[in-house]
Length: 60
Image 1 (tube, one colour):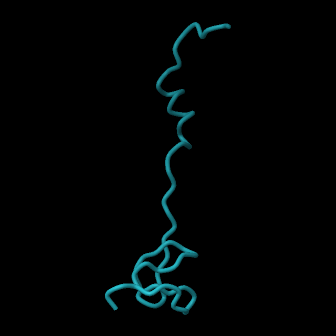
Image 2 (tube, rainbow, N blue to C red):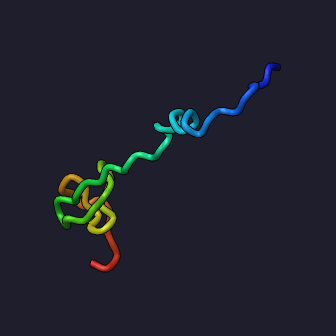
Image 3 (cartoon, rainbow, N blue to C red):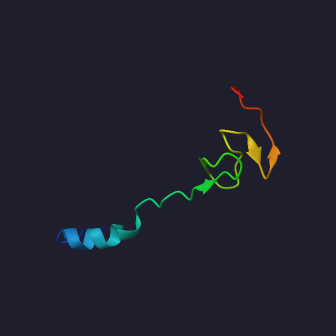
């Protein structure tokens, strides 16, 4: 198998890796308790989803 004759420069490596970074997680606000939660998930604080109580949360 052929091998590269010279090493790739840091700039070339950086250009290739420019799109490898992690994206920010989209966070939405719960309309009931106004805490941060993942979209399309039950709120872990109040246990509601789309205005309905889905799970009972201990402590309330």
